[in-house]
Length: 342
Ligand code: 89V
Image (cartoon, rainbow, N blue to C red; front, side, top):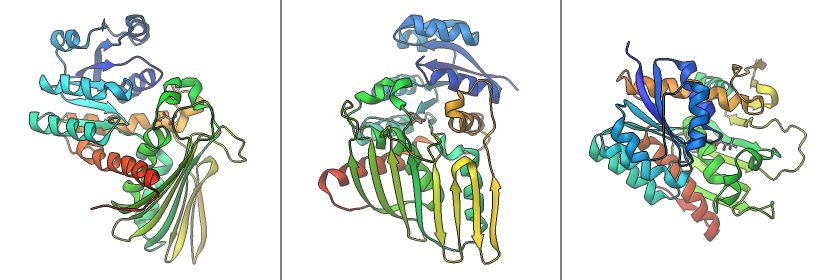
């Protein structure tokens, strides 16, 4: 089968893992890299054997024959590059968070829909190996109807060291991390009917919030879902960044995904415990293992869709529902009120 040719937009911290993830999946070839600072694009291109680099995005799109673009730039430029590609009928994959506001995200989805251009969001959290196993355990139904769940991603890890732009975001933890955890909540429990949020800022030297708790009623089971997030850089006994912990209560039992990838299903028969570690790739940063390894199945899912072999999970249309939860959380926190969702 012919390799799909693509261009990468952005050469920051995340781009190296995204490119390595593509080559792990195979069946694709990165033919060009754009970055506004050309030397950064050159460095990345040299490392991955990419033949051409550009510091002019329009010039790249006009010169290259592409099957898709992979946008890994800062969130503020996602719409600009998505629309540029859509105008040329080139399918788009864009990193989460899709956009800096709900209105911009809606515009991106609308523009791609109207142009008939496939539009996907690279949303990898739901592809983490232990989270897929958790979903399978929930779907097996042994614990019965889930009436309540807790999703915790709470860490003292200094995220600003590798991604300094995160400190500059006026809306930080819910856009950066909530995009993931709210998407996982939808993946596990269905769509939200209502949402309530509180936020705090612990770091004195960042612009946005670094602590948030979001409570939703979700899905057919009307599950109460509490999502707790923090990057307060404090000290925690079970801090294993970037593991997400879950506790799900059902009518006939409970499921826990705890530290070190231990999945425990407890029913009348007792507790069945299994360890579900993610695969380890040599190219992954060990501090981000479970996240970096999830890039591989996420990219594989998007590639299948690009080849017309099935629908992707994280289309732009689907991710818009996650984006709505992100910004409904901020609205709720600003007004200190619960919001009913359609
Ligand atoms: O995956 C991410 O979105 C990263 C981090 C794990 C630090 O939140 O920005």
